[in-house]
Amino acid sequence: MPLSERAVTVQASPIRRLAPFMLQARERGVKIHHLNIGQPDIETPKAYMDAIRGFAEKVLAYGPSDGLPELKKAISGYFGRYDIAITPADVQITLGGSEAIQCAFCIVGDPGDEVIIPEPFYTNYNGFAAMVGLKVVPVTTRAENGFAMPPIEAFEKAITPRTRAILVCSPNNPTGVIFTPEELDELALLAKKHDLFLIGDEVYREFVYEGSRPKSLLELKGVEDRVIVVDSISKRFSACGARVGALISRNQELMACALKFAQARLCPPTIEQLGAIAAYKMSPDYFEPVREEYRRRRDTLYEGLCHHPGVLLKKPMGAFYMIARLPIDDANDFAQWMLTDFQLDGETVMVAPADGFYATPGLGKNEVRLAYVLEVPKLHRCVDILLKGIKAFNKA
Image (cartoon, rainbow, N blue to C red; front, top):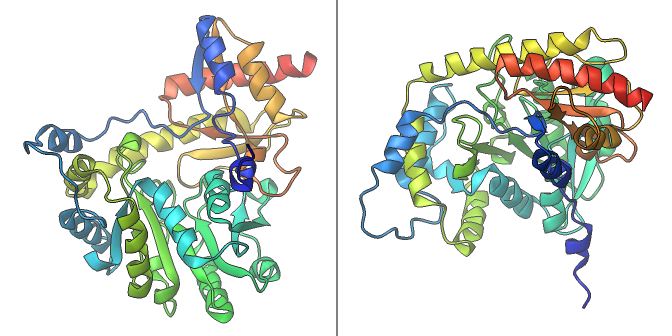
């Protein structure tokens, strides 16, 4: 029987495509260092775990479709710490940031409409767009200048009669770049000029290693009704498995539509929301040692790789990812070869080929995304394995 075009054409995850080779290597006894996926090893806060363990109800019942009121209030209070004024009515709790992005796509456009996204971008944007029939239109950033935002003229050139939104992720996955307040202000003017929505993926807000915190789209003036922010506790509180995110907008007509989508899937997970409430109530001091740990990890990986001949790498300013251009012909072949053919004293490294983070065919072929989510001694070891692996791969 024929399957839907959507089912056949939706992109498989380039991050997880190499999993079978990883499992085979593990069965051979090879120790694998995972730089391929953003799974932090930072402990989930005790407050979160205690709240879950303290659940005492005898029935785990449905909750409100838009999330527990106390969590919506906690999230609005969290933004208040940054002098960003939102109300609980501006917040809808989602099944992770993933559902928030998909919901935003469902709201801003119809099948065949377009959303502009700077590339490389979080690869699952492709899948979310395909599932709702949107077309991703890329605006390319370049490794040579650290993946800085292109001139505003590049965005305007990409706009067509089918364009409905511009999506930006800052701090960025996969590049670690942070877009400047001036760049976001220009996007706001462009969105207003062309009657577009602005979608901000801001899940890495705390992970900033130089300078001040990044500007939120919620701080832009004159476009308050056009802004949709996607948020999540997955990385902020090292709770990726909880699947608790948020869709945030001051546009109440938009939020009423979002509620209809939420009602169709009934409700977000109750117990995990209780953990999130406790986490959001923690002191902001929680983030400082976490941020310093990631700073050390970034510096270790960056300094270990950037001086190697043939490696093109600019220091990322935020999140916990970097894209490195390697002196290889094909990152897919290299990543697979590192799992099937190479080991150093019984160890190897798993990376994510970067071509899957681009929408433009042919880009990223010799680039990899690296997630610095391992302890510093392990990252030193990863650098040694990677550099020796590159040398051996080019001789193979």
